Amino acid sequence: MQRIPTEWEQDVAAIYVNKRRLVRPDTNIKKALVFTAVFVLATSMLVWLIHYVLISAGIVAYLPSGIQEFYGAYRFSSIVIICALVVFIELFFCLKYAIIGMVKLYQHYAPEEVRRRCLFMPTCSEYAIMAVRKYGCLIGLCKSYYRLVCRCGGVLYQIDYPWDKKLKKVETEEELST
Image (tube, rainbow, N blue to C red):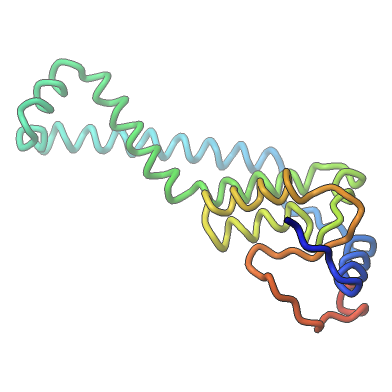
């Protein structure tokens, strides 16, 4: 069950929501497409390099016989498996940045009236970035999903950070309006 925010929390969140300057991150579709193309090109080169090293260095000969037979008989399937492993490993290290990039694209292109609907401090998109940075992709996305689906909406202004459950009265009206 959700707790009802205090009057102070509602006032602070209302000032933040209504007087904040909407930040449009310096990103665009062109940058996203360039990064995607670089990612695909790097993946292709890495797969080709792994395949080349496996063949030219004779590493396949040291693998178990079942893998050697499969690699010899099904060369294309072997390359696809290597590609899948490389993409999985790359996503493990890069997915966090891809998710943050997608949220920043949303922040850049979403109309102002859509972005001003959020009654939370921080906004849902800012919350998603903070949660993914702090907790990683899986937990950060779960926290963001819960915030968007279960908590967002309604008529009360609220303060809700991904990590902070206890608030301190340190913000003033001047700090929030800047």
